Length: 191
Image (cartoon, rainbow, N blue to C red; front, side, top):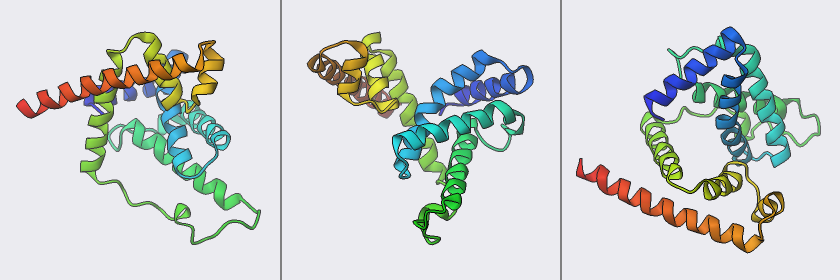
């Protein structure tokens, strides 16, 4: 994640904290909610559980944005930590007898290596830039499929487009993005 984006998110979080700025909150929600949902699903939550947990995390942001300290971490790191901790709390409260105290999900995770975090943030930034080159309809379909986790059938139903059209436009979007990313790779190696 670029420093500009980190600073922007920190400023938006401050606007939420100080002025209860709904537009700032909406921008943060739109950016982080799909990423948090995907993260929680990778940790084993069902889509509906993950969505509910994301709502909780974003409520924490709304009510406790003043606790975020940009000198200590990025807003992304703070929100993902809140999500991980909320998930651990939910697992601990689960009285169904299915809880295994030795479950690795209940153990604190090791901090991600700084190199890996920087690399992932740079990759994410490159993908976001590549998405900006897509026609709006293709970008919208990619967002629905990969950020919101919708199936091609759900997207077709939501948009009224034929299923084949949804699939072909997503394929076209990937083809364009791949070319853009490959061109970006070439430019990066020249510098």
